[in-house]
Length: 97
Image (cartoon, rainbow, N blue to C red; front, side, top):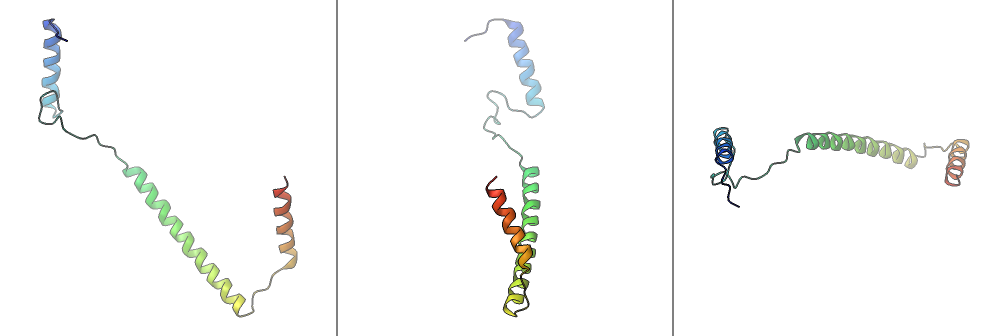
């Protein structure tokens, strides 16, 4: 499509020159090949923090399991039958709700 209105052509040229002066690419500019950029730094930082927190939880859980295993092997771990029964009943009731 060819534009024959000089005021529109003048406006386009003016905008094009302003964009080039700011360092933005326009038609025919050597910067037309530039790539789009997406910034994930905030998301990645949150993900790193969450992974660190999970590692701490895994470490704490592993230590607790090691302690329990040691107590069981040494014969020092005793199960409270009443507490176990309450937990099992609660689980059964929740599964039937």
